[in-house]
Image 1 (cartoon, each protein chain N blue to C red):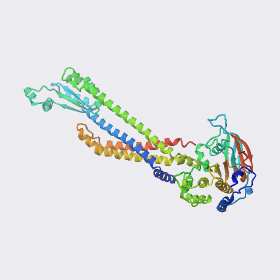
Image 2 (image 1 turned 90 degrees about the horizontal axis):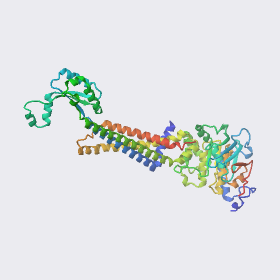
Image 3 (image 1 turned 180 degrees about the vertical axis):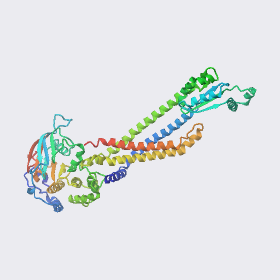
Image 4 (image 1 turned 90 degrees about the vertical axis):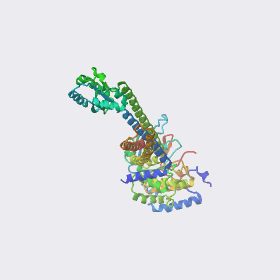
Length: 280
Length: 301
């Protein structure tokens, strides 16, 4: 495979990955046939009111008072965008995401999600915020003693959805991620890519308008990563805003979506159809 | 209502999934409650013994032979009106002699030559033996009694085992205080134990809690199954403890009674029932409060 050598070159044409990737793409394209498809150009980008606004956001953790995790970040994210959040380890990507789901509050500045100010949001409202944000993580965060079906159903159960809704929506979303045959498997019986698909299924089963992924492909090989990214792209085409924090240079360079680059807590670049842009 | 059904379902499946932690907390609750229950039973036995010893305390006020029935009646009704008095009875000279002859040999009676040196007496039984001093004092201060007392000095005519009663009460009170302190200490220890076990059980499932928070479950919804499970463990533990105590009551107590016949171990079904209810309720409360307390740190937003 010559892939590994060429990964560093951003300008190379995309997805030349041989027979495996081609077949994988084929199956995923079959799966996505059931979804309404918009061309990338059709997606309205950066129009209307932003769904997420960071307004001079600074976060300083008490452990490191002199080194802000995020330093005076201001940006806007619009509905339907697909955004890569790139940066080295410790650049503030995870803090950015944890602030979006209000696991941490900013030290200064304001974050608005759908016109609601997260800094003044009451604690009891936070679960309702999180119901509108799907989250995917590098380590999947699946419950090992529940089956695939139960893991996805769990997300609906705990927000009080009826059994009827669960019975119809869970198989549907598992079909969407291509796991319709593995409903009764446990996470440890699945491959890494399949587990990540389960966690994506869990994140979107509630049809949130925003999907946030923290290094979704960090544990996966390049080919499986491509499958995951295809899946995220298809989800994006249904109108879901997708924010992906990643290290995966090849993905960013190939997909040419908006790129927000962070470096040691500072916003260094915010670019439409951008590239990964960091030297290895 | 559907979420309540969900809590029950979750707590039951959580029970089978985390069998070892569930059994652990059940056994801990069971043993703690059993120890508390045993001490409560033991405490009521001791209390029973102590009060039976105390109830032996009575006042005997000797009356002169020439006392008029009127004066005697007025003194008796005066004593009846005092606090802590249960019954007041009058023993005539003949009755006193009869009692004496029953308790001692007939030779002494024979040497009396038909004379009766024993005085008549007013006997006071107390409902609250701790008040013996007070009752005796009031009787001593009663002027009518001073007139009819057997001795010139009324305090010499009133007998209630002054010094030994004092010592007895100091002793019984100490026994009570130590018993209460022991039981309080045990309850505290049991609560710490149970709280710790529940905390461990929740710690083992913190991943599940994290995911619940991630997908937007409200705090009440996260807490529900855990509280239900804590309560379930507590109730099972309490039932086991009650069953074990019931066994103890039916098998061990009769043997003890046989071995030590002069003390009364018969503390009554109502006391046992009270102890059982107490155990079940406190077990349930500890389970609920312990779970809620242990959950708190995982529910911070």
